[in-house]
Structure formats: structure tokens, C-alpha cells
Amino acid sequence: MISVTNQKRELFYGLIRIHVLLHAAHEPIFGMAMMEELAHHGYRIGPGTLYPLLHGMERGGLLKSVSGGGQGRRPRVYRITAAGRRALEKAREKVDELCHELHEAHPRELGSGREKSARYIV
Ligand SMILES: [Zn+2]
Image 1 (cartoon, protein in one colour):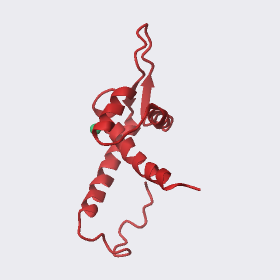
Image 2 (cartoon, protein in one colour):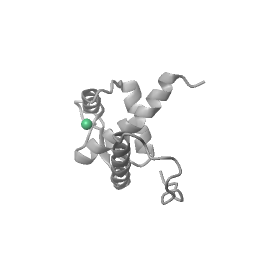
Image 3 (tube, helix red, strand yellow):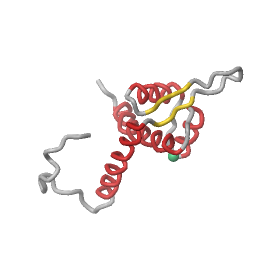
């Protein structure tokens, strides 16, 4: 059984991933700084959640990490990949569209247009 808390978390994970891509597109990122940045945006996310999320994004080909290495135990650094940039661009379009609809008085009537119904690209 999926709890409401889990549902909410799933809902926000997508937004968090977009934030991660956005910052990684701008500069190499590492976990601690990303956690602070997310907290700034109101997402309280700990290392036990963020690191698996980053690893998942790396497995999915959106990020590529290099170990900080060295004697100072520098943090693992994540960079966006070409696929990550393409995903970010797509996400930007989707978020723009969602934002637009969120701020309208009413969402579109379901079934009021078929122009996009043939495409199931997420
Ligand atoms: Zn941010």
C-alpha cells in the first residue's frame, strides 16, 4: 500500500530531478551543495534520499560522476550528459506548459484537442 507521504514524495521527485539537471547544466555539482540548494527551494531532502536519486540519474544516463579522490576526500562531482541536456530541454517545455495551465482559471477540458494525443513521449 502506498501512503500519501510516498505519493507526495514521488510527485516532488520529478521536480527535484529537474532542479538537479538545471544546476548540473550550469556547473558541476556535488551532493552537499545540491542539498543546500534544494533546501533553499523548500525541499528538505537528506543524503539518504539525494544520493540514490543522483545514482539513479547517472544509471539513466542523465548525469556522469567522477570521484573526488585525492587525500582531502573531495566529494564526488556530477556533470550533466548530452542526454541530460536533451531531457532538461524537454522538461523545460513540459514545465512551461504545466505552469501555464496551473495558472489558468480552469484546466483544458479533457478531450478538447487531439493534436497531441498520438504522441506518448514522456
Ligand atoms: Zn535551484
